Length: 312
Image (cartoon, rainbow, N blue to C red; front, side, top):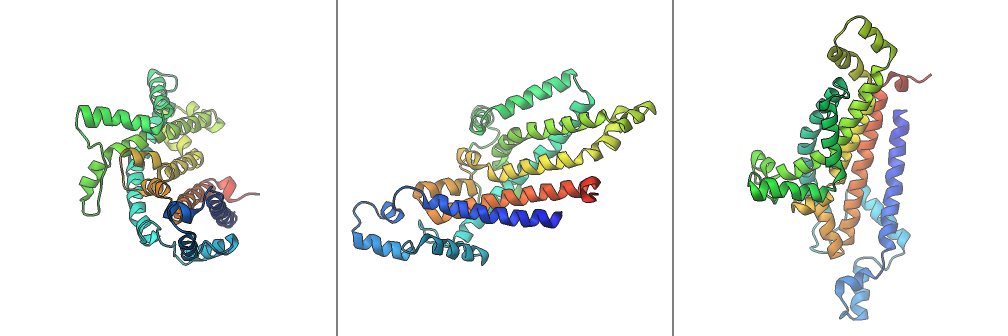
């Protein structure tokens, strides 16, 4: 079953690469004319199209692009002629650092809040946590980001409003500058994971073996930690990994608000400059990350569930 999921993931990535290429092909206007401007002569445009290999048929360019990716060659940026792999490498590291920092805060926080909400179901704590987390997830990311900037950067000056990081910063300084975007991402994803943890635990509390544990006089916290939580791991792992995928793929708005030099900011800058090879590469990185983490969620769910691991 695991091999089947891996094959399906590779097939999905191939289909996504085809959709990305066709999507770029269907964009209105001519790329060479857009880059050179209206003052360019037809001869200059034709020479530029030949240099970019835009004169080749679409299927030949797709095969050439795909073979280049398989060999680790993403091409060159039209804006500055730098290797795209070099451009994305630095930005991807920044995005992964920000996503990891948000995950370190959000995952344990949401699990603790979800467990306590299940333990004190229908109490004041349960209702308060649900209201706060649902409120945070109801607002768009840019609104949450600007609220945090207003209170923690402008009024109280606790954290910087711009997250301009560079390679020469120490780990502590980098984490300090990434604090506000990490808090924003945490508020966006924590509600989903917390509610799934709470729902999975409450669903298992109605099981016969949990009722037996209650009849034996076990404490509620021991029942949840030793009997309910291990059996609820499969759906919890699934929702946690899916939210981790969102932390990498869905950071475009947050990176733009905080001027954070990640892949999302590179993607937006490349769209503005009509740097199509970089746009294609960013889309492929986002798609590959999302598919890889979805595959990880599927495989972990199968491994943690004996009924899926050994189907009859």
